[in-house]
Length: 357
Image 1 (cartoon, rainbow, N blue to C red):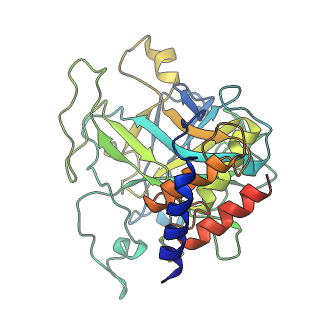
Image 2: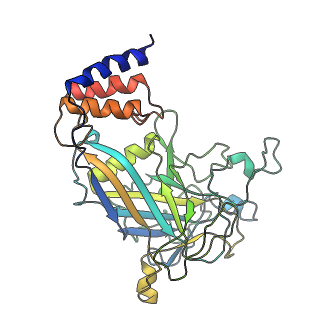
Image 3: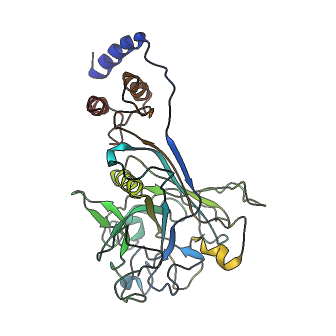
């Protein structure tokens, strides 16, 4: 009998003791419709922090490619999550159930829908390593935030400088004070703004997919892969909670009371072109007046704020937590250590946390 089946038999026998079946409990659902920060991060942004739209694009293949980041126009979004989600807890007391960012498109049919991440070598048509992109368009990708030049998540604000020498640093390459990031193999956050020319695959924590809205008078129909994306379509980014940088960033953000991300794209554009993804910011209503359809980016999170061994989130560590965890584990949703698989190791890791109280 292998280890998994042995555990199954033993625990099925224990279930006859009658512990299973207590009500699941008190996860926190937080919905944040208005960002604390929504900033178009672009070197030539002449009104930093007050733009009504944020555009995401790349200068690849243009005469200016070498002077700017591959991911040039970026969209910073951040929400204050306290007191809806209790701040100030130990990081391992935040168990993230789900996190979703929704950004609403402000331009009509400016880019094609692409729901899948693209490898860096699909952007290198003259390189021997080139691999053709198999679908139309380029994806919108969301990353955790990294900082340089002494800035932090606590100090960076709606109108903080884009980079040293702002407002118009030139050349503007690998200078931005806040950058889209992922862990390298040492666990350090690295800037993915130039991943094409640096020749590595970026690892977004979410790729935007298009969905229709119920609050638009004439909502667009289904937006399929390859379609031009209509105005007022929502691009939804479901955070991949198997990525360590995503979990760490969300836990750290909730503990500090502010959660933030960067939305980027390698959509190719010419300078001043309009055929790129663009999104409403909260400044749209300030500049244009009330508009029921012009929503800024919103955040939805579901989180259990409790001790690590409290699987059912009833704020007690009891035998029932073991049964509830194992029920999820046998159903394939017991990836306690967030390594991307539900395995026997998750049981050992959960039990270690449970015995620790």
